[in-house]
Image (cartoon, rainbow, N blue to C red):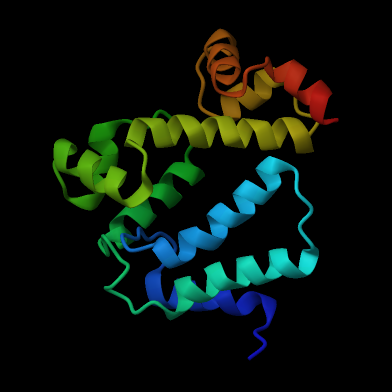
Length: 179
């Protein structure tokens, strides 16, 4: 059966929501590891074979019964927190505030959030800020000073330090490299 491009996305969202964690992923990991090893070795991989491997992975995500692959379905509250973070990166975001959105205590929230996303809430916020900054540096002409504020940094020096730590170059060096 040939499936249209948006089919997998629609099916995964319908069955699992925006965020889900998996425990029994061997069938999905095998083609992913194969792709990785081929690219790592520099061996030629035809577009047809690459498409087959990717299709195998996506088919597994769609076809595995819900509950057999899911580690945690309490993702609704975590999804809400993640959307809130994305919409409020320019504001201070603290653990107490984020945990309160889910009705969990701070320690339970950290555990549930990390289980659902693979990140602690703090690491997720920092990563989201840096990824947003990278996108803005690549796709806008805003100054670094404006970008640091848009990404929630109170001082340019904090932003530059965090960016360099994560990306291994300064914001301006990154902008010059991608443009």
